[in-house]
Length: 180
Image (cartoon, rainbow, N blue to C red; front, side):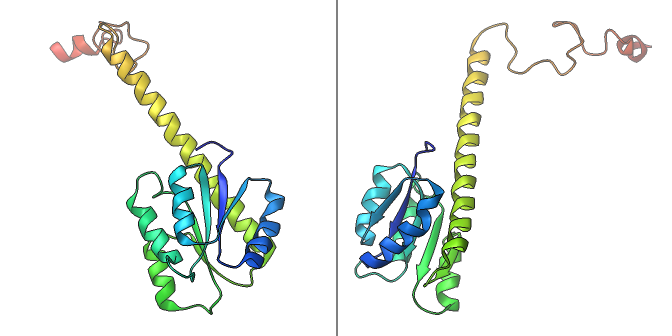
């Protein structure tokens, strides 16, 4: 996921979308919007979404349904989700949301400063995770390249001071002591 990944804001009320966009604009990230769960899923499947800010209660496909679907797909299962609810904290909603791996459940109206702080942290952490995964893939590819070339060990010798082909401990006299 490139660092230009969007923060997708999903709510069925235009005024709420506008308020959330205004709250998150100072972060400097690209923002996307959707007015339904179905539209959100389409945008998620197109890719380039780095975080989802999602209303729980929408007509049709609700927020929890969107998250359930996301978690089943490899390309979307790790995207951080912050759920928004206009209702007071509900234990059942909280339990269902956190069981699906939702990062946070925020009650509307939101505090713009607190929301920006949460979103910044989650977005940056997700981008770092993706960068580490890319680095691991690159290192694995290099390792596979090296193992495919005859005469090249897959990993550097654990005793770098020992010449290749010479048994470990040969320079320190360990082998001679072991033989006696």
